[in-house]
Length: 222
Length: 216
Image (cartoon, rainbow over all chains, first blue to last red; front, side):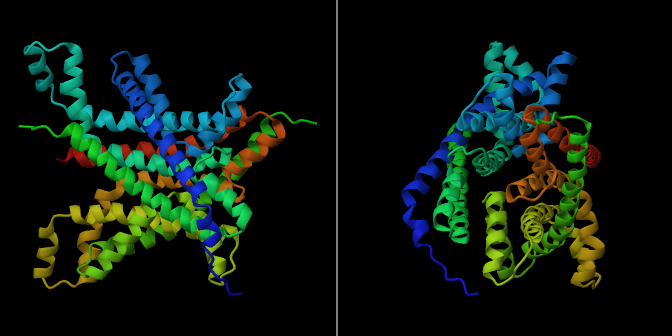
C-alpha cells in the first residue's frame, strides 16, 4: 500500500490550529505562574520547623511527583464532581497543571534556597533589612536565579504535558489536532504538524523564559 | 446493576499494573541501548554524529510524548510495517527514552575528568576499551541518580498507553471508573499503585545522589 502524503487538509485548518496553540500557551502560562507561587508556599511549608507542616508539604510533593499527570487530570476532572465540585475541562486542566507544577517548583526552589549561605541572611539583618526584604532580595531572588535553568526546563515539560488535557476534552492544541484527525483521517499528517508546532512552542517558551530571566536576574553578583 | 469499587475491582487494577511494569522495563532496556548510542554519538569526534544526535534529542525533548506515540503508531504503517499497538508503543517509548537517557549520559560522560581518557590514550588503549573499561563505568556512577529519576518519568509516561487503548494500570482504572461510577476512589487507587511503584525508585535516586555528593 502506497501512502500519498497530503498535508493540505491539515494546513487548511490553520486558524483552528493557531487558536489551539494560543490556548496551549494560555493554560501553560497561567499554570506556570500560579504553580510557581503555590510551589513557593509549599517550599516554605516543607522547610518549616513545625514537623506536621513540613510532613504535609512533603507528602503532597511526593504524591504529585510519583503519580502520572494523566491520572491526576482524571482524578480532578472525573473525581471532583463526586465531592460536589464541578469544573469545566479548562478549569480542571489549569488546576491539575498548577498543582503538578507547584510540587516540582517547590523541590527545585528548595534546592536554590538551601544553597544560600547563612552569612548572607545574617548580613542582611545586620544591615537592618525587614524580614520581607531579606526574603525577597537575599533569599528568593538569588535562590531562583541559581535554579532558574532547572525551573525553565520543568516549565517547558509542563507545557508539553498540557497535551494530555485533551483527554478530558479541554480545548488546546492536541484537542484541535484530534478533531482535525477525526474530520480528515489524515492521522500521520496531523500528528506531524502538531509535533512541529509543539517544537516551535517549546523553543518560544525557552526564549521567553530566558528573556525574563535576563531581565529579572541580571545584577552583579560580586 | 452498578458495581461498587470493592476488592475484586481493586484486584483487576492491581493485575493490570503488571503491564505497566512490563512496558516500562521493555522500553527502558530498548531505549537504554539506544540512549547509549545517542550519548556516544553526542560525545564523539565526528561532527556529523554529534549534530545528528543533538537534533534527535532536541526533537524528542521538544515535543509531547503523546504526540510521539501517535506519530509512531500512525507512521509505522505508512512505512509498510504493520504492527500491533503494543509494538508501536514500545518503539515510541523507547525512542523517547533514548533521547532523554542519551542526554543524561552525555552529561555523565563529559563529567568524567578528561585526564582519564588522556591517560588511557597515552597507554595506547583503543576507543572501545577506553569507553568500556575507563569512561563508562565512571560515567555510570555519576549518571545513576538521574537515570533512576528518568525511569520514574518513564513509568509515569506509560500511562499514556491508556489513550491508545492498551489496558494497563491507567486504562484499567478508566474501565473500572466507567462501571462503578466511583472515579474518586478508582483514580485514587490507580494513583496509589503508581505511587508505590515509583516512590522506592525516587527515594533510591535521592539516596544515591546524596552519597555521591558526600565525597566532594
